[in-house]
Image (cartoon, rainbow, N blue to C red; front, side, top):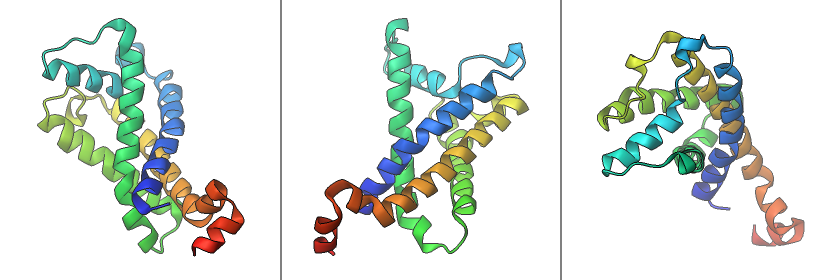
Length: 165
């Protein structure tokens, strides 16, 4: 498996635990801070930027598709950078997750005029998002390492993977 494919798969897989963490932390927010989570507001804003409104029937599937696609895409650089570092997986991954949070919520989202930027969120929601990105980053790093070491064997079998080396 090539590096970009491995990173994308690791990011896609890591978005599951991240989403679960978001849902669990969200339940503990004060009622007044339980507005829609950023993946939903970003998806809604994306469609609005094209003059479209996504209906209630499609907002959840569109949000999940966009969320997992973003997770897959933003993990690709990790597969090129992460293996070069000798730091423990949890340090590399958590740091990468924090970097993606900062780039997304302090840079990309504000520059696109999307609602979900960190400077407009209460501190608890920022803590929730940072924590979820730590989970995502650690999961990306763990999945990428596993796929790098064993992924080809799992996908094509031991003999074919050994023959390809």
